[in-house]
Amino acid sequence: MSQLTTHILDTSKGKPVAGVRVSIYQGENDEWTELTWGVTNHNGRITDLLKEDLTLQRGIYKLRFETKDYFDKHKTPTFYPYVEIIIDITGDEHYHIPLLISPFGYTTYLGS
Image 1 (tube, rainbow, N blue to C red):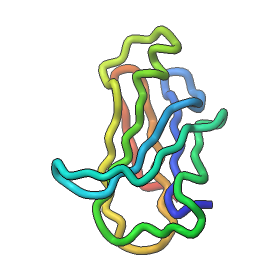
Image 2: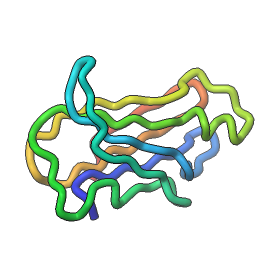
Image 3: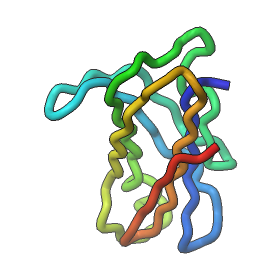
Image 4: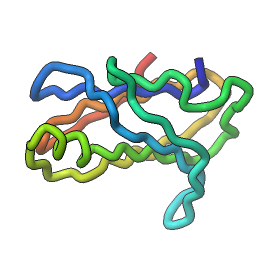
C-alpha cells in the first residue's frame, strides 16, 4: 500500500465513487508540480497512488479530485467541478485522505 491513499463516497447516494481521477501535486501557492495520478476503483478507493518505493518528503501537497465527470456521468448538476485538498506531510507514516461528496457540498478528514 502506498504512503498516501484515498477514497471517495457520494453521501447523497451512500455509495462509493468509481472512475474519478485524483492527482497529487507538490508545491504551494501558485507553483504546483504534478507527481502522479490515479483513478478510483469500484470501491471508490486508490490504494496504489504512489509507487511502493516512493515516500513523500516533508512539505505541502495537493490532491485534486476531478468530480465533475462523475456527476456529469450521472446527469447530476454540481456546484464543484473539482475538489482540491491541501495537506502538510510531516513524516513518513501512512496518510489516508477520504473525500465525502454530494452535488453541493464536500468534506474531508485525516483517516487511518
